[in-house]
Length: 211
Image: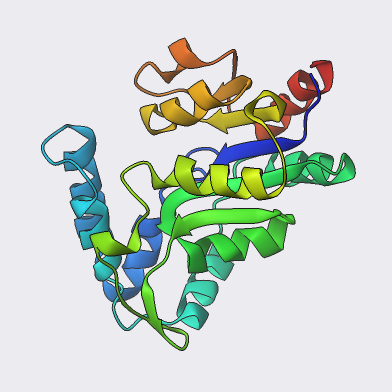
């Protein structure tokens, strides 16, 4: 396989917890954010509305406040730094995709040397979050849509892509990519993965090297 790009999920893959919950703690809404997310995963709610509600908790929060919160603990998955050092040494393009905020993802982009991030883009007043609505998304599967747009610009085909993720939210990306790796798989996503690893993202290195 001629590998050129890695599409990688964020929450549960690069980090060990839901960072949006953590950041909602800035405004005392961590518990509410977690409850909304749990209702979504139980099927009580659907669509983009739960994510939009959680993000709008952050109205008035600045990017500096986000950076300060993540400097306390960035919850990196074991092996994450080693994994991205490997990707960069091979000159692979890395695309971190998430329903999380681009201002959050940019913290990890800088820390880990990630090439691109795909995430939600709230309206901003300079460095302050204003709001987000459904119009600010490219569609329900915006993570795949926006990742494909980057790949197209880089002239990279699906046959040159590996996907890594942990949950059913990654299924369409797994089906798109030539090969897929599930880490600590949840809710049956391992059935759609070519490989499964546990607890340490650097375990994906040997798999990628073997392809």
